[in-house]
Image (cartoon, rainbow, N blue to C red; front, side):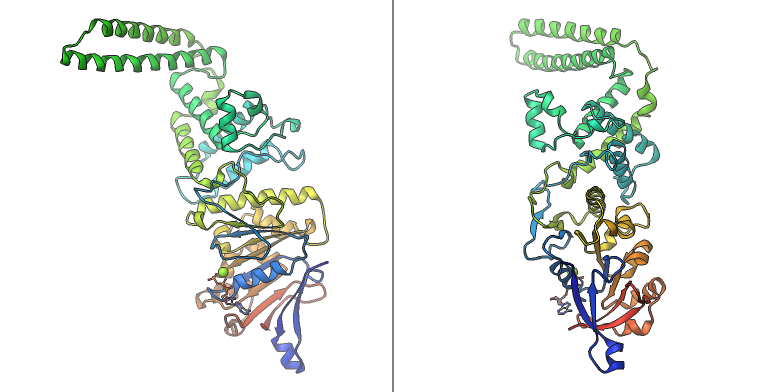
Length: 459
Ligand SMILES: Nc1ncnc2c1ncn2[C@@H]1O[C@H](COP(=O)(O)OP(=O)(O)OP(=O)(O)O)[C@@H](O)[C@H]1O
Ligand SMILES: [Mg+2]
């Protein structure tokens, strides 16, 4: 079974030959199955998205990234992504495939995505990116996962709750069998920051001892201060002071002992790697802030969405769609993962999986390595198809415009005529012809046909 969809009637052909000449979208005739749909609000983008989904054979998987929550398709399993459902994907999960997966790739995906965000609270500078690279690599290493050893790349996916339960039960063995989470990166970063402040190497045994001596000292100082406060209060109330005075003395001694233990433990000075690796305290602090921002965004919680074995998966992203950066990162991560899955499955002549992006302006990226463009230019032979719908052809990348097997223009706003004419080499008269829900212009890259826009009358 392959997909074949009647689009409408070829306007000029029908006039010329005085007989209705249909335009058919046929998977087998097209040079690739990718589809771009552009049109104003109400022109019919969602209508056509649903048409394309409905026309796919039952064994085609579909991933719909739905930011308006209006792409309801029969048979789809819908998962709502919000701060309260807490569904999301663990950024630190790895693809265990020795050829397509691994630590380096996961780390560079994450840096790539963070570099692409537009908001300054998320964006990384060069130094910060370097620091984050080390933090991620070290977080993996703490779980025994190493870039050079593919045998260590396969681990379990665990949820937030499972990770907490393991930690509470001090079940380090089970934790070690699982991928780390973003929260583990933050914890490591905070420890590194403390080590930088204290001037110790937290990876050596003496450094660790110095850090715990310092913690001990801080705790002792805290109880000392509590005791002092209580004493001041008691004095005012004229109570019995002897017992408290004794405790205060004991507390002081403890703090001094802990502090001198800390000082004697420091011996490494500043010759350790971490100084160069983790740069300055400021850089590390700013990386921590960025990671915490990312953690606040619910969609990177390690709680896998319950799609089960559904063939049509609808990611309802409406609750999180106000944050474009977050959305962009999320979709980029999913697309990268889908690209890898499809490459692993191997080549296919037929469509096997379809990705649907509505409001594609959010994901516009001219970088040829961005997964959205990789799908358009390289993934046909792996059976992966993408549908990108948006208000204007300006929301498609050059790579997409060049490669998409099908471009479908619905009614366009007049401000979008110029970009359409420039980017698509379509005539203004053809744009004038467009009516919402009634007519369109379609360019299909078919075998044995010169690609040009044809006027279509929808039925
Ligand atoms: N070719 C068509 N034939 C019949 N009805 C259509 C056609 N195209 C669109 N419609 C109807 O027009 C209405 C608006 O279409 P749709 O929701 O697809 O617009 P849209 O481009 O997705 O708009 P928005 O940008 O607001 O999401 C819907 O009720 C849809 O069913
Ligand atoms: Mg729509």
